[in-house]
Length: 113
Image 1 (tube, rainbow, N blue to C red):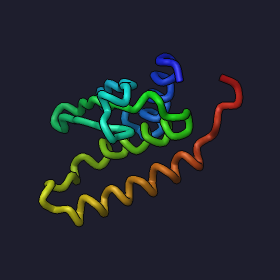
Image 2: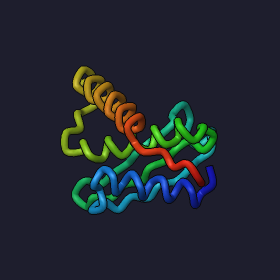
Image 3: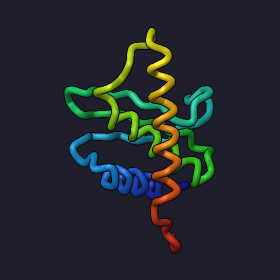
């Protein structure tokens, strides 16, 4: 996916998820920078700002699903759990995966790029 297409995708999902009040900087990064992760998010909840990194080598479908997944972490940022509460963190991650898969499946696809 090209950077301009990636930027449009992120803006589209930011709007769909009604997160226009967030200042999100989204970047595609190489495998070396991402380690074992497809996506990663860091945020400052008090300022509603976030950096979202997505693995650039993902196919378009996986990349879009990963963007949705990371944006959902932002939506649920007020309910983040400490690292020590593994069960709650795992439950939240499962919920985010289910929601991301569902939103992706239900989203209208663009036929012409």
